[in-house]
Image (cartoon, rainbow, N blue to C red; front, side):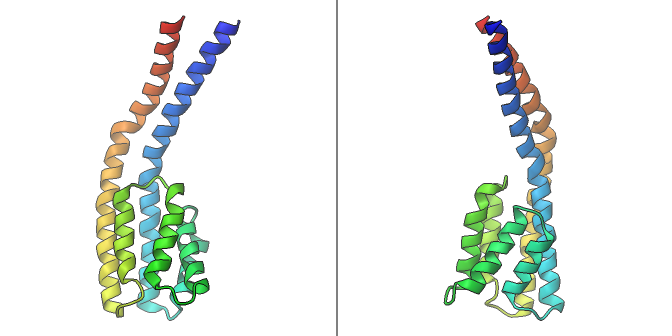
Length: 172
């Protein structure tokens, strides 16, 4: 009975690890799409709106789900609360604070940080150009993420179950 319980636990643990890894591959393209949608909202606000950047970030945070909504929420809060800090410093802090809660890779982080360097310090046209550049870069990353998802998601799930089965067979 104890052997059977141990075997079930091993199979469950390795399967769960495989499914969690597969979920990361599944969530990455969705989070990149969500990030692109948030940047589109920001682009619209820069083009047609007249609100301050902290208010725009708070508005985007309300519309987007976590963790991308949290990124804009923290950015808006830092811009409002940290008097004297640059817009980039507020953006960098928000990215750094939110990053562990995402499944995004370092490439996307660098795209966001590069975008944040010009956020709020240049004229409207320059900011829109930088937004388009970030959108294009994220579009490429989304295509790569979808490719990885197709290639590895199912494999990770299967590998988790099969690894558990192999361990159970070898032990017992």
